Length: 394
Image (tube, rainbow, N blue to C red; front, side):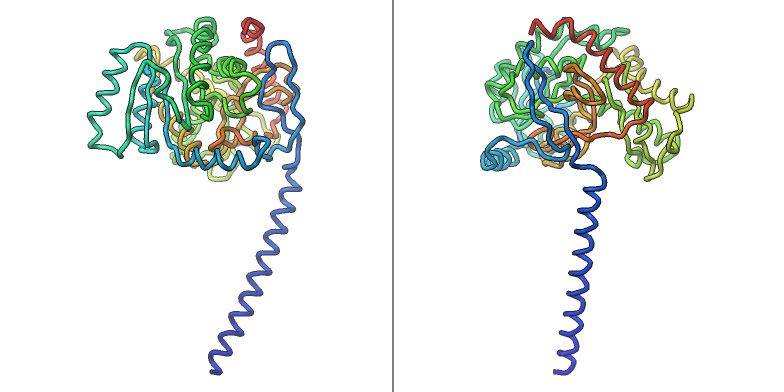
């Protein structure tokens, strides 16, 4: 009995000590949130529609964007978590790369493929279905009819004219806007609750186009572009290979345009927690060469094999997993940056965004250097110069 009493006293003291630690941790967390400015102002994620200016009250950066009724949000979230259906619109080389990555990673219970080339579509679907004995159980369906995407949780749009050797992503705009005007209404018709990711090029402008086509009633953050997630992965790979470390140990972002004017935010890049640059230090020629290699990588692959598909397929599959599992990871995807760093137009560029089952929950307010801010604003101006040629006609 004496030993039992001593044991209870020890347990009681340990419990009090644990409670004290918990109170201190909670207090530290609250102070951290206050100190780091998580209550700052957030730019809205929905573009103006036509010539009207749709104003959304500023909200904290880390406050999730939810429908008016919290009960509706909760029900929708549970519904999407239960449904792990992914649809791929456009089964060209990029769509095929995405589909193959999805099948091999086994994250979806159902994959729907849509393409207007009936014979090729059926051939690709049959080829994947015939390998069903070698991967997780997944239902693969294919059709030229958009009704096949019904009940999808995540839809990725790759439909568009392929990028030709030496052709910039921005030069593709005119040909692909018309395709987007056909795709988006059909996706929303059959999968109104889906998160939509645009992977067609030029990615940033077509994401803005898709958002405008969807209309102001479509929830903000539910349409975003694949953006610089792949660019960031390429840079992480180059840095990792240069230092002989796993690229997953390299953290940081390329932001801005998914293309020639992308901005390597060197101030955010760390290897094993150690910053690549010292505070106030500008990137040197070696850093510039690494970024140049990222920008040229897609052109180099297209020159050699005619298209890119495997790397973009893996990056989109990573985004799909983040959505389906409601991971709320920060991924640099293309979203409306009006109001960020003085950008005044409805330009969609990449910033690290917390992505979950409802799309973008919030956007990280990066503390960029003056040099990075200048490059980001220049990227916005460059994209808008091209985007403005079609914007008012939508």
